[in-house]
Image (cartoon, rainbow, N blue to C red; front, side, top):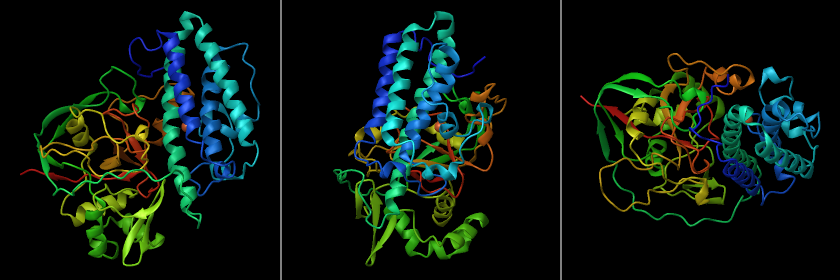
Length: 430
Ligand SMILES: [Fe+2]
């Protein structure tokens, strides 16, 4: 029994399902339009994967979990690809080591693209032809595969940014984008009642298994910053010696700062007396009004300590976000970088909860009460990573539009900085 929450009636219209599948596949490929074959083959650190690998791996997911299981006539494109493009599914078999993905000069990009075409065509045939009783389970897996591919769209952008950042030429992934010119407003705060609340997936629409089950939580009264912390505010932390003063840092964070020699967020570059930032549109001057981005959890937490505040828990974040419309600076806008708050009203309300930057929470990534991963290989999707990682919420400027929900739980190790990760301050009331 596959336990993936999907929208009721998802897949009922097979034609619409094909269209959605093909749209997401095309969106992935469009992200590579400006990349050379050389760009697509590089692995700049063990955590990041070459673009080419993402293209193959997302394809392998559909081949392995749908075509191989449900289409007796399916012809595997290349049996060796199962080894190359399996990411972490122990139940599926052995795999190529993650840190060595950059050594794969073969298969060439055009072969990987042919693999994509082969699998996409077979998927369309499967969606058209699979018998009704099998379709119900297949539709849930298909939705998971589509959501998985959207996650890798974000990874493609994160990873190529890192690849370009270590090239002394600092290549630009795309042309400069129009920057939002907005005045930097003083930080406002929004109050929330405490009490018995509920968080987690409600049971309508798609959700990953880690968002369930919905359950009760107790919250003390709290307030949240109306917007994410900005580069200008973070600069204040740097200028007051934030990276030299252990009193703001968690012990592991301070150790990491000293070991890594951190003195600013990832992709901040000294420029004379000031700073510039490396973006997917190349290097540009630091904009103090933009949300600060590419922080580790340790830096986000240290900044909050320096501010005399704290990070919100994921339960606080989710209950506050539940009534906020899901719109914002997502990938469809093409900035691929957080923007200053573009709104002109002065209403006291939460801004930029969705899009721009993932917001580090204070919450460890652990199972919700009574969580049960799905059985079989798909159960490895999320559950086995519930250790030594921290939850982030809200999506970022590189997150696929339509991919985010109030209950969505992203997660990274506390030292990770290559995600588009920032923060929003919180504090106790009373
Ligand atoms: Fe994956």
